[in-house]
Length: 288
Ligand code: GUN
Image (cartoon, rainbow, N blue to C red; front, side):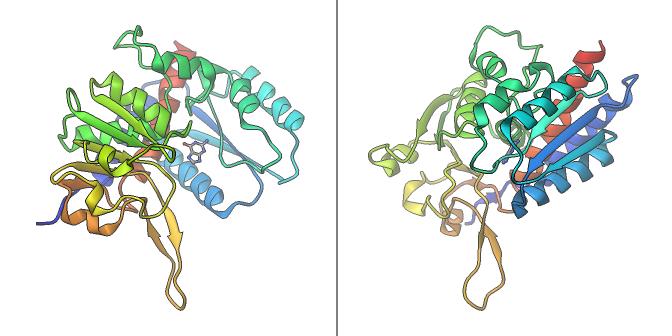
């Protein structure tokens, strides 16, 4: 029997309905500013997708498309202007940036209240702190929050269960571990230096894969019946064949897993939907 397909569209729809309803009850229209630098085609397409969804959700957007040659001081000046503008509620700097630009100073330069990516060290610290009130959600990275929303939407419990996260990036792996820990899972983070990766991934009831490596996870690495969330997305083009999108999880895993997210159409829509919700949350806090 094949794995149950955990499609993202219905879960994303539920988040978007909530974002839209909350946005419309505000006295102002939440305003999200998207910044990109250079001509990376994937970033271009992601920014377009985020902008389109924001408009549908009732948010205002502004896109700053900067040249590949933009300097750190120029970006810091732009961020300072946006931070000081009370008409801007959310700021997102699309990654990856051109290689000459360091990421950390940019994350630190976004006003934490407008940090809809949840990458500012203050928000990272808040996410990892177990002391925050349950009713005061922090601005946390969109993909991990989206993964949790996807699991909840499909009725997959995490509390008390073994969750294994493959990958330790700032964007997904690390915050994913914090989000799962906050949801009472028993969490292990594995990465390229882990010995016997397969033995570790086989322990997972819920396996979240964000390694950035196509087809890293094969059927022998998955416990029969486990839930597998594939965060990876890669363009694969064989000779004479059309470009296909695939994830970090080999398709053969569908024969072993109990449930599996598709690529595309799994986690992706949740990331965008969660960004809308983060922007609305940021706006609510700035106007109230
Ligand atoms: N590039 C890939 N994922 C993300 C994300 O979540 N936020 C930003 N800013 N850039 C990304």
